[in-house]
Image 1 (tube, helix red, strand yellow):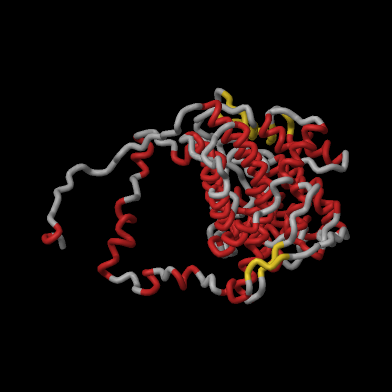
Image 2 (tube, rainbow, N blue to C red):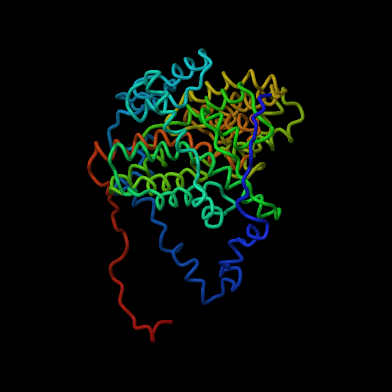
Length: 484
């Protein structure tokens, strides 16, 4: 175990100051709880539900691309990019044909990028981030310079730390990261600048500071709950992103080189996934307006926070935990398939009928990220005595698609996506669930930055989609005194 000397921790808040935060509910009582949804308030709270549901036939009549998806499930083409390619199917004259998945960064296979760095026993995320942001693989000198620029921005100023915990405490670290990012705007003398130099400097700042922001957020929440003093570990120089994450999260426990190398694989796989994913598109939408980088990245974090996007990994982990406790013999395909059938029939887990971690909007026959995760996780799983749990997850991957076909009549090809394995990997590394999505955000910053700059300097038009109005135009105004 690699023990990291912790140095001197500096107190930021006393217990009384920390507990003075109070909870959100104490400061801003929810009216529906305090006052109740009375008959007079019924329209306020539920009126929109009666008018906001549009007849599905109207979507067909106007050929609306709901979710920016075509009828065959493929994405609506809204832009062109040189950053990445997410391949999962072929379009033929007969329609969409399933294909093996591929993920390409600036022309390079993500598998080749990971295999090269792992083979050479070096961390690969910074190399990939440089590639995505600059458009070319770095020389050793360029990579060292890039890392040094990130290193120089790891420290959070004392003035920032005196403001940050009080103004950003929340049970959600993703929410904290949003507000902490917006707070950094106030410390940037050129915050609204959109020059290439400023954009890259902001990205380097966030690469350096987000890991510590997430750690402080977790510590502040724990300090408030336990009436303890909040302390912050010193910033480390010369660490990779993966090492920095494990350092600030694992503290005195330390970490091994193998653990950091596996987390580096996860960082590379999460670094980018095309302009069509929700959080990256949010980045591009805001960037197209010319707004500042902090606002664009805060919006991307808000998107990734959603349970249909980055938050999906928590659902998968909870489902696997339930399967593990409910299936007595993990090696029995019959028993495992039987429980998956209960989930598909809405009789188990969250009663939605979904087997989380299966299926993807683009990938059909395989998700290359899931295959790479399994490849590099196996050694550490064996070392930590988790080989059987990995085999259980592989069983879900193998049996789940057939269960969905048998029970739900699913015809679309279903493959395991990376979310099926993400929670397992993070648990293997001793990372708690509330940090799964924040780590995803830290990794995805490389892709967000690349797409933001492509939108700023390439596309050149504000994004303004169209919505057809299908409301009636026959409203007759009734004076306030006469309304009933």
